[in-house]
Length: 102
Image (cartoon, rainbow, N blue to C red; front, top):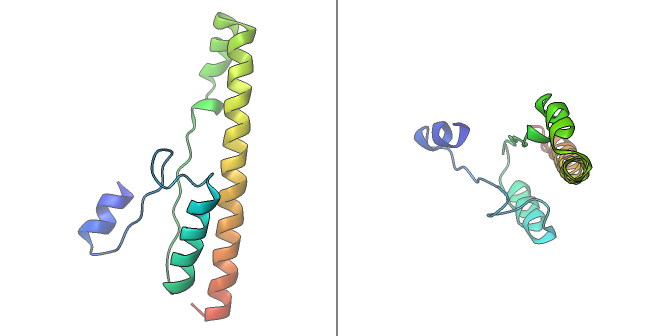
């Protein structure tokens, strides 16, 4: 939705998702740093998958057992990494804006 609204408003939108500009990839992060560094006033908006943290997962663990629990923990670890990357990038963007006076 944010991408469509931005585009309809004439705002340049770059969407990152797992199969395109995956933020887990160092090359993608370099591209994003370059964009942020050369576009004063840029905004960052993120949305992370919520399914690893859904309350339904408790039922799924009970229903599908340890193999499911192990796979879920791997997905949660990946989610934690995405959160860390997002926080780092947002902090960097905030520092950059402070320097620019934006």
